[in-house]
Picture (cartoon, rainbow, N blue to C red):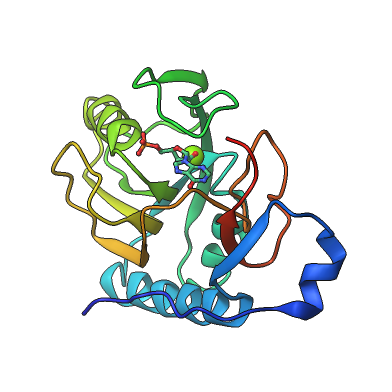
Length: 193
Ligand code: IMP
Ligand code: MG
């Protein structure tokens, strides 16, 4: 089943972030929250009897992780990694660097890698390769957003929140130059990239 984002405007939030950078809403707050609950329920079912380790990719996946983990009814554990791939630009550099590594040993663990958005897929393919070499029992990916059509690598994405059109988006953890992560919805960035 495919989940395509519903377009809605959220004027009640828009005035809080008085900025011409904010474009069309791609996923509104209520739709986001409902889908995160569905993803959590799916993970709860799929990992019944196990204690998965959820790894959030900072900083973009922070909001998603906070909501997703609270929708999973399992004795899970949480860790975070930070990678840098974008700088302040809206285009990928193709270079991925681990800025903060994991604290928890992956040996024998059922790992779920939690990503904010898969664009070219370069970040994900690098993380998959790196984590696969660390002795996990299983490794799946849960991505809130997947930008349609631009993946350069053929990564298998087990859990996907929404497939979105090829525009740069901000909000719910996603930034432009570190701003707008605190928007409660995802919208198109209309500013100068
Ligand atoms: P990829 O390596 O091209 O797949 O890029 C993945 C990373 O780039 C994501 O984890 C985000 O941090 C960042 N990114 C990609 N697209 C967007 C966007 O539309 N808005 C904000 N950040 C983005
Ligand atoms: Mg990211």
